Image 1 (tube, one colour):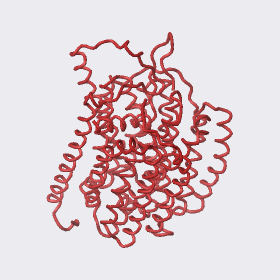
Image 2: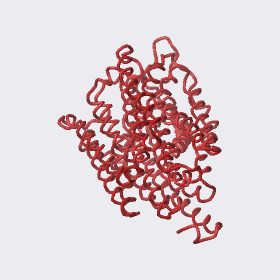
Image 3: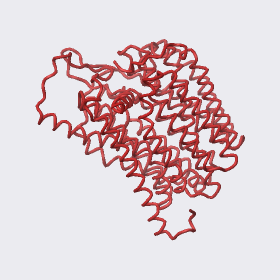
Image 4: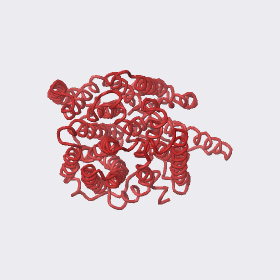
Length: 545
């Protein structure tokens, strides 16, 4: 990731999503240590849903303010360090800032970070809110629940692959153009999905939506990293994390509520609200690039291979043609990627990163956590709606998981410091496996309580596993390749989400929903086996320089 070279114009390199989130999680943790349709008429139902949403928003935004307030405490803020690939002034050479300038910068940072956090949260709703509406969507478009899961699997796949691409493209042209293109694709995909006359058209729209949404976390945090410094930047990154968590965590409730009032098409359209935020952010977005090269062919090879895995796993819901396509992509793609990496050792998958055993093992272990999360996003609404629940009631039932998601950073940071990244990853994998076992039991007997407990547990595992992965990878590589390594780890992490949704969507008809969840519970165990050599190392308690 290129930085500021002598005699050239300063350039801004967008950190990968995990690189950006690592700074958010560590900032927050350091600062921390520092009813059915017939019950009511539509108007009364609207009042009930509105009151629920209002109460939920107050709760999550209140928790978000706690995170932001903690991160704004300069006594708790960690020492500033430049993002990977960007230089910072030597110690003692920083120019003093007047109190009025500092106040102005802080106020501007609050405004920009709030907008970035809102945009981040709306992008996250592309999966969390849409999953709640899948059973109704499947019924309306005349497909099975297993087939409807493609809408989540393909979204997660595109999110995984294109996240790293946006960071590379920003090297060429700056942040403005890729951010505009990304949000444009997200909005266009959401609109196309909302208007889709068939399920096939919806899937195409979801592919574009996922490809666009990937720009938001990568480039949004790049804006903060480039524009602010020191404690102002630390507080801004914490604010982005808090606001994004608040918006994303109410996704299931928002999706269920909007579906109940306006239908599933309005749920798919929710991320379109992000278009309203771009003009407000425009002046803060860096426009200059460094002219770094983009390994587009390598990105295509990786995308095709990852797509082969997802298509093959989910093919039982769609037939032998999809299975054949998936197998072909996988069998041809895997050796092609290996050959290309040897030919372009500094390309899309840098050879120094993928040969790092700690990075690969940590990423494989962590991938089981989003697999469990995306699987339950599909399984829980499917089971409860099949038993007569309305989507908005499912959203209400998942409110405890929203609260867990907001509190997880306050647990993850101290735990990482206490037991290290490898053990934290292992703990997250164990929790994810147990959550899948509980969900299988809940799906088998139709117990809403067990299903909600499972979602709460996997939310905790996600909140612990993601920062643990970032810390493990960040500590395992040199600083000059840290951003790229975190990008590769993100790829593995999000492909895991696509595999999880594919297992539930593809195998639930053949194995039943409880059977597919039981099968998926093996994945975190395999992750633990992969992670075992890392566990024998002495954990490092120093997460940042």
